Amino acid sequence: VVEQQTSASETETQRHREYLERSVETLRAKLEASRRAQRAANARTMGENAQLLQEVNSLRRELHLARQVHVTNGKQGELQREVKRLRRLVEGQGVAQETSESKATRPTTMERLPAL
Image (cartoon, rainbow, N blue to C red; front, side, top):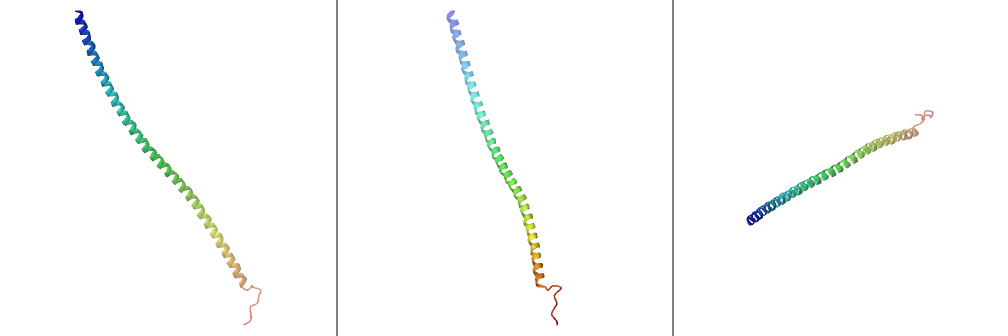
């Protein structure tokens, strides 16, 4: 009877051991599948992050260029206005010089014209 109980106990222990080994293998397989899924998710996230960083950098460059164009256009407009102002000033002085030169060659009203 003791031998049968020992045999039954050993059989039960062996059966339980096999059950636990199968459970461990199942858990290891699930763990590995979970790790693979996590690696894939991490790789996907890193790819998205890289793409977003490229887009952010592109937008930063675009913003920088837009600001430069805005500043340049603003300065360009100021420069063009200044050039026009100076041209008007120079043209006005040129007219004043021409009139003073033309007045110098014309006889004054007090001078007598030669007889005919």
